[in-house]
Image (tube, rainbow, N blue to C red; front, side, top):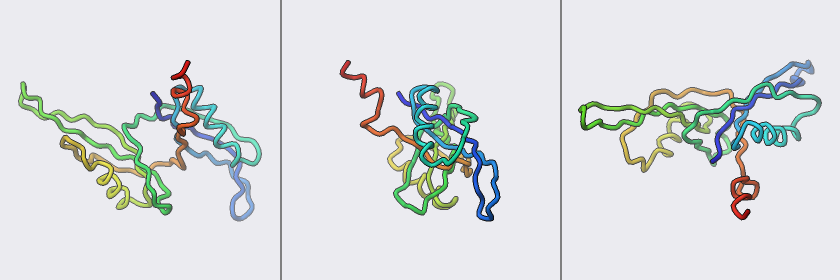
Length: 155
């Protein structure tokens, strides 16, 4: 099963006024291990880099779901913390399990709309705990033709 990994890259970027500035950007990669995440991230990012770059950090991103948008103006990523509410019938109390969902949107309002749309059909009760803009620039998903789990199915 694949997981999401948050990867950071540091490189020298030329600004609009011609100055060179060291920049760190964050991306999300789905992979089955840290090693695969680093390999895939470098493969994805290398064509966009001119000059040297360093992968400075890779960590697990604990996400229940990633909701991508078809709208090309949705160019930011927001993290929503959603509480799923269940009833403990023995104790007669509510239980809340909080999970994070990543949402692609152009602003907070659209993120809320896209989250509501993505949560349609959810059987249990839920409520939004928070929505915050992230520093994630883009995500790199495994496509069906490069899925390592699928590749090993016939072995």
